[in-house]
Length: 276
Image 1: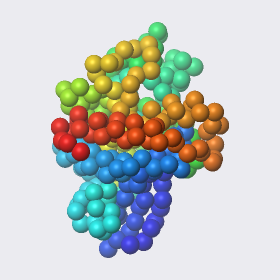
Image 2: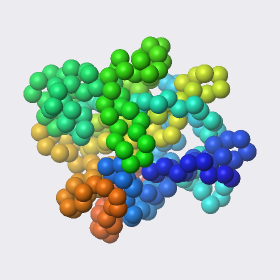
Image 3: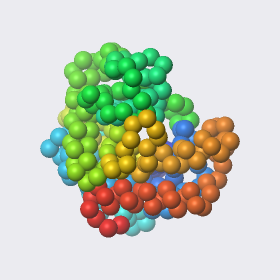
């Protein structure tokens, strides 16, 4: 296999003309990779993505060729995939207001140009899910909110409509299923690319604890930070550690690692109904 790219979490290899996507145990916050891995994280992300890919197959095709025809050393954390020409837009859907979306709303009253009602607070449920695209920044740089019109300028009107429609339907379908299992999906980011025939295809990961915010539905309370099954717990630790959010990042304490791993597992188990 030939290593093509090493990202914040995933390593991309070429093998027999296919792409082999390997999810590591690395974790990043504020666009910086932390030096301490989260054990089993890569396997959890991969298995949760595969579970979702199956359930979203009627919404959008995905890049998966095989989850078993991969090198033995990557078993459980790798997927053999089709090659895609990735769209250079981060496709994000939000059903609740928090994180960078909340900050953008507090500054402008809108997110990615989508005007929102006044008086919303951290954790507020939006009247309906919204498409809030961002730029796709290089490693170490920050994504920036862009409007739908800017997506049209970058990708064309037809593609922009497709990106918005697919992103919102993936979110709606995922949020409905997760809510039935006691989990709120506050927001999510998906990656889309075109295959050899020009069809938009879902790639990378989908509806995982790295690409989404998961909250326990029975603890949701607008107006405060929510309990999270995702890496928000690590973000909160990093924000209070005194670190300046630049390289090099500090080691993550063992207790933070253990709690984070447990939350990733709980999200997987609650959503899929399977035991890790």
